[in-house]
Amino acid sequence: MLFRDKANQAAALADRCCHRAAPLHMGTVVEVGLQCGYHGLIFDGSGRCVTIPGQSRIPDDARVRSYPVVEKNQLVWIWMGEAAKADPASIVDFPFHDDKSRWPNKHDVYPIKGNYMLMVDNLMDLTHLGYLHAKTVGGNPAAHVGAEMKTTRTPRGLKFTRWMKNSVPPPSYVKAAGFTGRVDRCQEFEFVAPSTVLQWTGATDAGSDYADPQRDFRFQFRLFHGLTPETETSCFYFWSVANGYRQNEPETTEQLYREIAPTFVEDKTMVEMQQARLDEFGESGLVDIASDANRMYMRRMVERLIAEEQSALAAE
Ligand code: FES
Ligand SMILES: [Fe+2]
Image: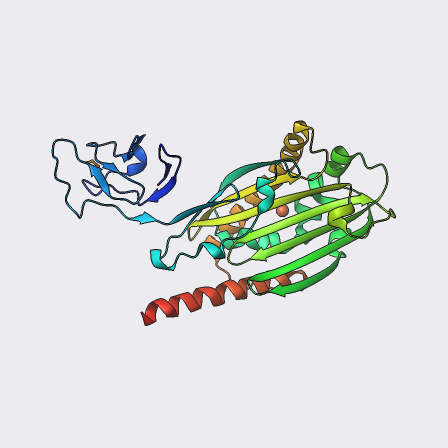
C-alpha cells in the first residue's frame, strides 16, 4: 500500500499488518505514520512499528516490509525487488512534467485487464492508429502504414521517428490547431525497457519552413506512457499529456486530454479483448508482419532482461 505521511513523504508498505494480517490500506494516516485500521498499531514509512496501543515495549520484529520509493517528475517509482539493488539513477527522465509553463499537463491512470506487454506492443506499432483510432487521432490508415520510419537502438531500448508529410490532419488536430489544409506530421517515440514509452507528436502546415520539428512545429504535444504490471493478466496504465502549444490557455490542456482519453480507452478495450482471446486460445498460430519489427525488438529486449535477472537470482 502507498501512502504519504504528514511530512508529505511517500512510502510503500506490504499490505499486511504484522499483528493480525489486516490489510494496511484499510488504515489511516496519522502524525507519525500509518495506523492499522484493526487494533491501531502505527508504522512509519520504513515499516517499523512505532506505537502499540496498551504497551510501551515495541518488539524488534514488529515491522512490515517497506519498498524503496522515489518521487521524480511528478511520478512515484517503487522498487519491488531486493532493496539494496534499487538504483534511482536508472529512473527515466521526464522533466516536462515539472515545466508547467512550457508543457502544461494532465495525467490519468487506467486499470487494464491485460498483460502489461500487450500495452507496450500497442505503443510500438502505430499502424493501429488508422484503424482503431479512426475517429480521433487516426487519419488515413494508408498514411500510417506507409509512414516513413527511422528506428535507432539505444542501450535501454529504441527510438523511432515516423513522418507523414503532406497528410490529411485527423479531426483532433484540426480542433486543437485549426489546420485548414494538409499537414506535415511527425511522431517520435522512445521505448525505455521494460515498460516506459516517451512520446513527442507534432504537426505543422504542409510545406512550411522548419528545421527542427520539436522547435518549429506550431502544434505539438508530449505523452508519457508507463505500464506497471499487477498480475500476469492485469496492469496499470499511467499516462499524461502535455500541450506544447497555446500554453497560456488552461482550457487547451483540458481539451487535449478530453481528445486523447477516449483514444486510450480504445487501446484499453482492444488489449482487454486480446487478453481474453489469449486466455482462451493461447499464443500458438499467431503470425508476425512487417509492422511488428520494433515490437519484436522490444519483446526480445525485455525477455533478455528478465532472463538475466532470473539467472542472477538463481546464482545467488
Ligand atoms: S491487525 Fe493490525 S493492529 Fe491488529
Ligand atoms: Fe492506440
